Image (cartoon, rainbow, N blue to C red):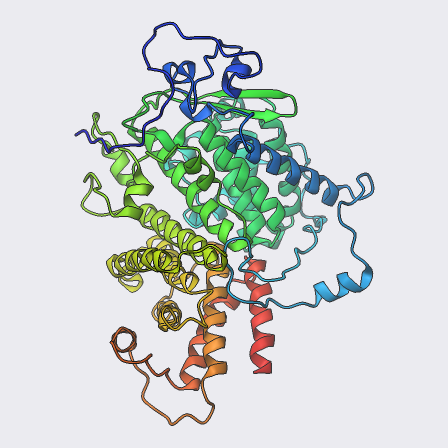
Length: 604
């Protein structure tokens, strides 16, 4: 089946192979300069890049502002510099110096502030904790080299992988697990390393140590953190390892540092995953406007390292690439909101490039053959936002597709709300867009399967994230309008109640969840606390109402629905805080935010 959506014109020279004029000196695009190719200087995309299927790489440095690649490279360079400061304070002078009084005040500051919007962190003022302390293994635990190329003992590897695998879905592990395990079980270490890079292996070992219930295994966590970080640094300077391996390792490391409340390092590894995914064109898989496969280019100082990405061998390998892209996309969208920074994918859209990769299927569907051979797609995210046609492949969206759509709505609602303070804003036009996004969020939320009907723990965990993302999108959309009657309809409180009630029947025995839930539950807690403070303590008792009753009342043409009694709202808040407290051991971010809200709750 073939499907082609109308895409914006690419511009530039005709794609044919005819002669082209040479651009004046200094006017060639960045891609042609790097490849030492003749460039005609056509804008926005030169003929050479069109002919070689490198439209996404065609950027000019002489425009009014830096190109998306330059912005990403500059951000990564700044993050690398800051990480060097944190790792080696004795060698690098700090870029910002705080006096002792300021540091003491920050360390005692609990999460506070209004609900975040673009450019403002959802976390409020939160101090990143110190690096994980090195744990000295006991006499019964063998000493392990910090060199990532030194293979750990076989029994240690087996225990670490067994501790990792049950949580792989929550850790955004997109590689095909049976093939990964087949490679892991290769008796020859050299054969294993042909398929699995040291960066990937040590990232898996790190998570296995972190999630293990064995104190002996947890003692290795700090060592594997060093090994994984070093392995990634080495891998980006070499080219013999699969770029998909490296993207997976970057995703695992980003999740690890976000979990540990180390946001600078988490954002760095998230940005690296985005850079690799875009460089090898994972956003153009099955594109009706782009038939080429990517060669990932990663800048290291003055050098550019390239990674070949040949066509996938089969549907399973194509599935790894598609699912890998959407995990990276969702992570970038979610943490951009959490940290108050722009999403990297907004930059490529502004440059005229769009995501064409279809929404992902379930892994079992790729095992059964995946997409039809002639299937093509275009403008995947844009069509979802605008309500455009979606070519049918499966009877329903995969769990990852729902999660990626929810992340899209979460980030888009936040970005729209941030426009409210613009001086030249057309309020009527803005309200039209507000209603459109609000309606899209409502329709999406109503289409989600309930969390409590899933018998699969991994599916239930993913659905919990998706449901909470959708509710948080409603909250974010109203984050700047508490004083504006036209948009202050109480739906943020209704959404917070729905997020809290999704935990009523949630009883999964896992001890780890995606750390983005800590951010989403923070937004929910702030709404509930705000409602408690606005609700009179002596309000007459009333029977608790269902979510449907509250929603119906709030959407009626009459005034805003009266809130449930204060005790009922406190019970919802307690339920969310109990969930955060449950995961504090494996997710220090949960514990940090939980303790901040408990201190606020005690003062109410």
